[in-house]
Length: 131
Length: 330
Image (cartoon, rainbow over the protein chains, first blue to last red):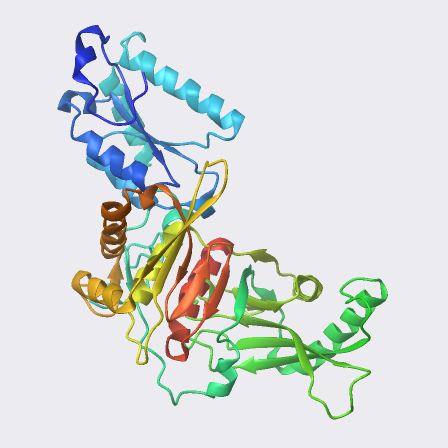
């Protein structure tokens, strides 16, 4: 399911299936997208931040068109205890690899991978990022 | 608190440079404070020489350190470059059709363009010509100028072995064909690499915030920002002009420590401008691409073209550009 901002319209609450993973997409070329994500974060229940949220930064192939400070995004990831992934949607190989990564994360968050919970996976990601 | 007041550099906890490096190395960098050098006093150096740099559109390049560049040999280099140009013209390159020209090359040192003690003084390269048809004592016409400089480039020059000279910023003005000939010669002779230097919207917003806050004596020109809107069937440019007094007043309410600028202050400044525009036109400028900024101090375009307009702040502008060049090299 794709939405341009949160909160999701309440009319469809009854029809909506369980949400296992929220991916916040930030376009490096648009400061507006970062502001939008920051505003939407306020509508997310705290329990999601135990491994069911991740930030995806797109457009990183074009560093010369960068409108936001990468440091600010890293701080956002730290503040919300969620991983930050970087990708370039215009490159097919990267797009495919990123999609596979997200699918894998989704499988873990939905509890489909035995022995691995969303929380344990997020702790794993955080420790490897610190190294 | 000396550490916070000196120019920062990425990756080292005691100093942290936000400008340029913040996106060059994804992930690290503390919230930087940039310290502005005091404006040049009018008496320092030869104003005539530095006036060469003003009011011209310079194309920016980053240059890797030059190997075995000897300052004492500038005359020799001029002769060698001149011979190289003549040879290239024989081959049919760098030729202006239909014009018989003698091209003279001059290399000179500009010690006024230097920030810290460690900086190498700037080197100016000028190609001038006198048409064989024109009278003997007419003045040479300057065809092309290039300037290597380094203003507060300590980060690069710090650990540089002795044989290398650090002049990471190159400014070029004139025909592209001359640039490629001169560039080729320097690359071959000193084993360096020239690369075009682009300026991201992120860095342009730092520039406009910094320059809009500068005090200018005479009537200043408007602060202008130009945005390009992506993904439209026909390209659309939005030009946003602000009265310089208003821009300075806004900046004065935001800046906490005179002489220092933080990322937060730049963000607040830009957000104020964006929300003002949104209130009137219902357009979100933060979703567009900032492509050009103009102030009374200088103007800069994202393709890496700058014009410096005020001699007092020349050093400050060159310092920023040196910073950008260094982050492209590293």
